Length: 246
Image (cartoon, rainbow, N blue to C red):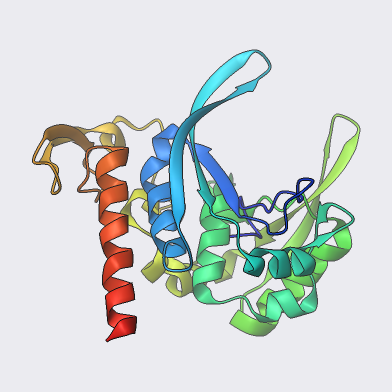
């Protein structure tokens, strides 16, 4: 998650341990809840509704944050240098298919190239050397080839990663078992977000409170609200703790 949208904020004065947090647009709340449940097995995690203002326009979003823990201090030591997120060969050696899937779902996109939509990873927070290292290690570990591409935007130079066209299906095969239904658009070249077919909603019943609500047909969520989702996450933690005691 750290390679993508996740971040570990700098320690505040008087604090000893750090935490992990990330945000997604409100429309991707189900994906945020999917990641929350992965983190809930490590320590307590919460989700809150928020907003982000860009150029005078306010966009609703959801923020997921873990409790502070020494683990995140160690992770920060590996992933940050002088306040900037970075990456090393050791970090890339630890990358799993799940980690690759989360990274792509966070920062990846399908972009058209002469009518052929191909995966890109928007890795412009990393410099050219780091992008080249990530491409090289992904090829070594997974046998697929990303190439570093250069983009100039408003007199600034950024570097992104573009997958070799013939590796697209192999890449999808590696990550697809970890992609929840709400993010299938990332591995469906026929999907366009403004396509009305993907905005259709149907009546659904919350498995926690029994309330009926409108759910996107592409969604697999069974919960109508934040409180119901958090209750089910709490139940999961209780079951895990009970299993460890047993």
